[in-house]
Image (cartoon, rainbow, N blue to C red):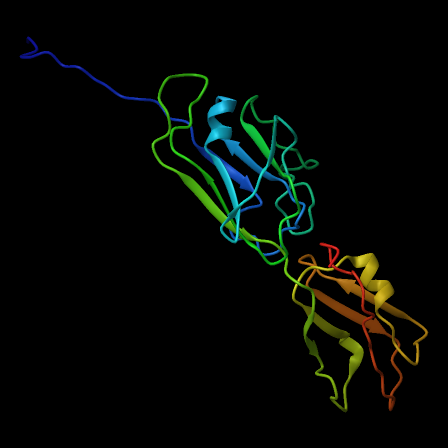
Length: 231
C-alpha cells in the first residue's frame, strides 16, 4: 500500500529545570549561615542560572555570591551524609552529579532568626546542550531556626508523684547543640549518674539519671547560646 499523505513527527527533549534543592522545601530549622544549593537536571549556563536566582528573607532580597560544582549539601536534620544501602554489602554513595549542574549560593550576611525564606529560579534557564530554555519558574520556601526557648516539659513543672525512669523530657522551639546543652542542664541534688540526650531534630532533650525517691528535683537550664544557630 502507499502512504496517502506525508507524515512528520516532531518532539522536543527535556528542557533545563531544577531536580532538587537544599535546604529542602519545608525545612523548619535551617541555620542563618546555611548555603542554598540547586541541583539542575542537566548542565546549564552559569550566567543564565545566576541571573534567574533570587533569595528573599521575610520578603527582603538577600545578596551573596555563587560557587559551582561543589559537593552536595546534606538535607538530613542531623546533617549526616545520605547513603544508599546496597543489598548484601556496605552502603554505596550516589555517583557525583554532572559538571555545571550544582549551583551553590552563599548569603552575604547571616539570615535573620525565624525568617521565612523564599527561593526562586526564574523561567528562561538555558542549558549547555541545546537552545530551548525553561518556561516555568521554580520556587520553594523554608524557615530559619527562630529564637530559642523551652516550650514544654514532661512531666510539667510542679508535678508530683513522678516516676522518672523514662527520663525527663524538654521540648524546645529550635534545635540545640548536644555538647552545649549537656553543660547547660544542672540537676540538684546531683544524681550519681546524669545524662542529657538530644533527638535527631535537635528540639527534644531527654534527661536521664539515678533520681532518688521522695526527692524534689529542680532542673534549671542555664541561660546562654545553646542553639545550633548560636542563639
